[in-house]
Structures are given as C-alpha cells and as structure tokens.
Length: 226
Image (cartoon, rainbow, N blue to C red):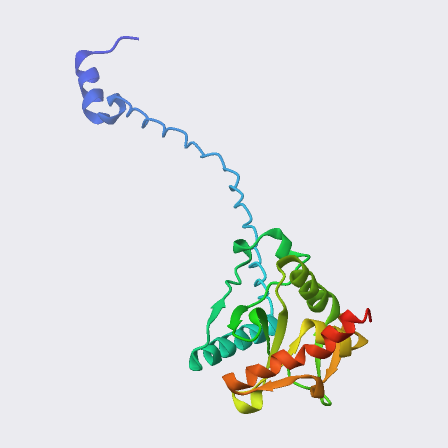
C-alpha cells in the first residue's frame, strides 16, 4: 500500500502526541531501612543502702572509781588545808610495777607524823550503812597487808564523812580492820563490815594523835600471838 507525502504529513499534524517520547518512570524510592530494635539495656538494680552501724554503747561510768577519785581529792584538800607533810602518789597504772596491779595495795598518800613516822593512807568515799563501813576482803585488805609486809609501812584507811563536807574523816588501820571486821558474803565477794565505834574520828591535825593509841590493842594481840 502506497502512502503519499501529503498523507504522511497530515497524519503527523493530527497525532502529535502519539510520537511523544514516553516519560521515563520516576526513579524508584530507595527502600527504607528499618533500624533494628535494640534490646533495652537493663538498669542495674541499686543495692539497698547499708544499715548504719549501731551506735557504740558507751560504757557506763565506773561509779566506784569516780567516788574513789572524789575521796582522794577531798583528802588532798584536807591535808593542804591543815598544812600537813604528805606526798600524793600518782595513780596512773603505767607508773607502777606489776606488783601493784595484782598482789599489793597501792595507797593514795604517804603522811609524815611525828608520833608514828611515815604511814600510807588510802582514801575511801563510802557511806555508812546501819552504823557500819565496809571494806573488800580480797581487793583491799589482803593487798593492804601485803603492802605493809613489803614496804614496812603501816597502811590506814580514811573514810570521808560526807555530812561534814569532807572536814571529818573516819580512820582505821588495815591491821585493826582485820581484827575487828566481820566477814560477810556480798555480790562482789567477801567483805568486812566494820562498826563505826572502831574508827577514829579525825577533824583536825591534833586528832591524829589518836592514831598512836589506836594501834596499841592490835599490837598487843600480835605480841601475844593472837
């Protein structure tokens, strides 16, 4: 079939769109990458706060020791008040031989008296009970007698009279206490109960002369072998 040039031209003018180059397809969108789901990082459990350490219980004050210090201070003041010739003995345990920590009594003072010479004194701060004062047998008296044998010095106990604000003192020698004291059992071991009538009341330096006659009955008993 033959086509003329005119018919071909006519065809081209009537259908221009037919000869239009096809529009290229848009570039495909790149595939979306899905981020991998990360496992949740476990939060470490916090350890419970430790309980605060219990408060350290403070040791109860040693009442007997504190009372003893008060007695020593009161007797020291009394010696000073009356200008007596005495020497206070340091009670620091580090300043004494081990002998004093177990076997022998450690006195509080050394006192020089014209009638008796040098004597050792241990201050006490006990309250009389039913007309008696007490003295530990093991911790006090036996150690006091050991001290006397070792140092050749008589040892005396001076009990503070609290009703007279430390102006009056009740004195008794260790030897006399052993002679007249009544042995009794207590919660802390055996002790001596000593009636007040066996003590010498010392209110001023002149009363110290009583200490000389105080020892005579005991010395007589020792001399007799009692």
